[in-house]
Length: 414
Image (cartoon, rainbow, N blue to C red; front, side, top):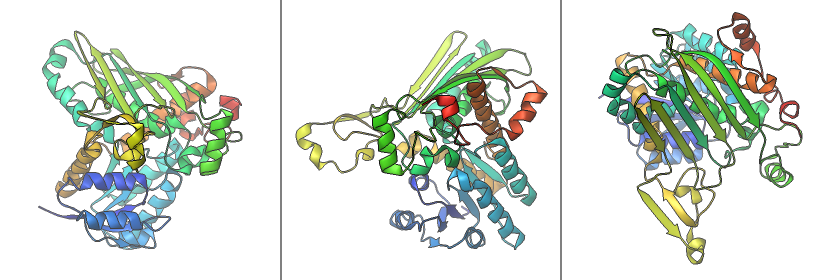
């Protein structure tokens, strides 16, 4: 088995989550790390879990010259700068077998287009990481219903949702850095999942053609004085000046290019889910069949009473984004695998080793950015965005949502 030396750009939450997944993937060694702050915690995790003895580099260019595959797990606001440095390293003689970019590809279409153009100029294979399309529950659903879908037709309605109590880091809350609020952060997941769930088995992930987008956003919890003050105290983010949405919902209409049939993908996201922790949901309805997924339906439940709660040090040991360490807890023994992180890393490894194509590449990531921008435009203007209109498509290429510009009060009020 070939071993690929991975170099990871970023040392925060998502890096550590991917490392948890990589403990279950053969043939990958973490050879290097670089981050805005020294990623000592990530390096220690890699050593303790026998993922390698990574060197901490001082620059992206230096890292790229010493690895086989580069993983971009750094924040959204440095994506363009990061890829420019990767390309510069290649120009200086670095050779890579692949480049991975974590979702979302970029904050807007102009940035996404820049990233695609940059990576295509190198000829290096690229993978876009959207973990939820790799979830075993979703793949098992499509396999189980394959014959049914072939006989009765593909699903006509999909509902995808993701909710939790809010991000870990301050830059996620800052719409000018992250690219928006919950729609930019998690809506990209749900747009992709709904699109995939509606796609006929055996067809490419972008087979269905998006034709219309209707969306709404709101600031329901984190704009209230108490919670606004908490954001200011914890992260230095002032939602009285530059708010972002904590709730988003909408519908994308897709068209089957072979039959002309229209199908619907609903999405819903929030940063105010106060139950056990991160909740992913997916429902699908087809002619004569249906399916449903809820990641909080765990095979393991634990109850911790008040008397014992002082012994609990980490609420997230049970579930990502958990806000409680007592009461009835849904415990997921292998979250990295549950959410698809393991399978997406295996998919990228196979593609880079064999010279094949990963399930998702940066072109697909760009299309998800397009749908996200269309959703922001719909919410901002109060109209349905027509993706068959050439003028609208041209407008989206340079569109930057008001929320992303730091002008969220014009959309959200307050």
